[in-house]
Amino acid sequence: MKVLVTGGAGYIGSCAAKHLLDAGHEVVVFDSMELGHVEAVDRRARLIVGDLRHEGEILEAMRAAKPDAVMHFAAYALVGESSADPGKYFRNNDIGGIHLAESMKACGVKRIVFSSTCATYGQPDHMPITEDTPQRPTNPYGESKLLFERMLGWYQRIHGFRPVFLRYFNACGAEGGLGEDREIETHIIPNVLRVPLGRKDHVDVFGGDYRTPDGTCVRDYVHISDLARAHLLALESDFCGALNLGTGRGFSVKEIVEAARRVTGHPIPAVVAPRRPGDPDELVADPRKAFDVLGWKAEWTDPEKIIASAWAWHSAHPFGYAGKRP
Image (cartoon, rainbow, N blue to C red; front, side, top):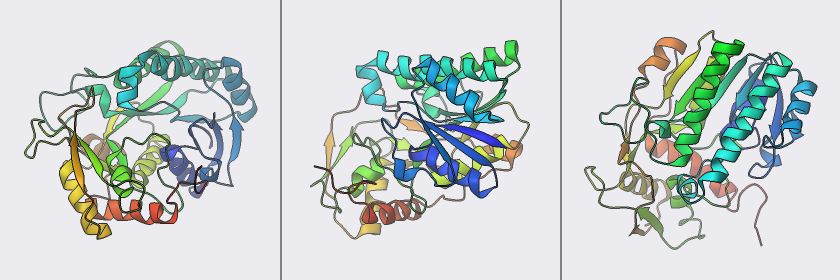
């Protein structure tokens, strides 16, 4: 198939594009490059620079690419930022999403694999989280993703779209030359690794009084290689609907810091900081439906191995893809 990958110069999108190419598919990457990196775009893919918020740009790209399907990764994804500036998130993630859906409709493209999130569930009453868990987001980021899921549901009913919503949990790790590089970094693993890299003198642990065994947030950490593999399986299936992507096991922030100490051999001082707005206590997936539907199961389940993959990439790219920044 020919696949248009929005956000294909980003962290997860670039990895998914590589897996698509390795599987013999043709890839066109559409990315604004606001947060993406040209170094992350596989040389086998065609890159179109454009912004989903500009309706004409995505329509022109859709007409030029003539894809059989779309993988949609392009989005703002910082929980704290979304709570401070919700309009930024709804303009980008939802108005941009409408432009994408309308361009697909105009060009007769029906299949879309949407990079959604467990943040659509908010703080569930029970763990682990199934696909039937009520979706009650606690931050505008999660709400923006849920809104686009609902929009695609209407495009499915009215226009015959065939959407898959992959609600994945905490993306992490690195694969080969592809890793996590953001100017504003909120994910715990890359932030922890900045300490042994000499970029920070300690790691901030946001909140020590959550309703968890050690007081720090518990998350289900799923490796980007596993996520990319799930997107490929979803694309090649006939399934429509929602699937959770996770390992089925949660680890606390404190456990992740301790694992990073073992991997790097660095003491990594940790300082408890105030909670971030909108952070739930615990988010752990029930991934059984993804196995039943796609035969997908996370292969990366050991946090030390996940951190080691990230450590290898960050050690080789201590200042990200472009080298040392001013």
